[in-house]
Image 1 (cartoon, one colour):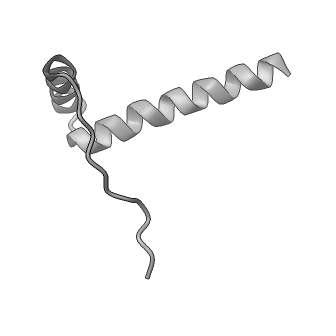
Image 2 (tube, rainbow, N blue to C red; image 1 turned 60 degrees about the vertical axis):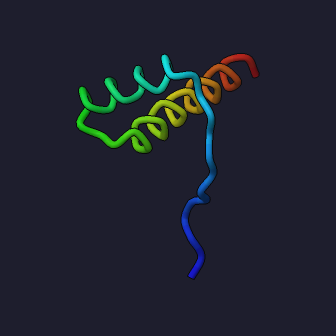
Amino acid sequence: MQKESDYFRLRVPEKIKVWVRERAAENMRSMTSEINHILATEMKRDAEKEANNA
């Protein structure tokens, strides 16, 4: 069985880590889920921008 996602370490400044932790708590998500949500949202925005520029 293949894993759905890969594991990797990411180094971020403490200020960003605190921001993600606080935002995750506000949204009742884990930090991993919050980061995935933020990235997925940005990916969607980029796709919409590309579609509008085509």
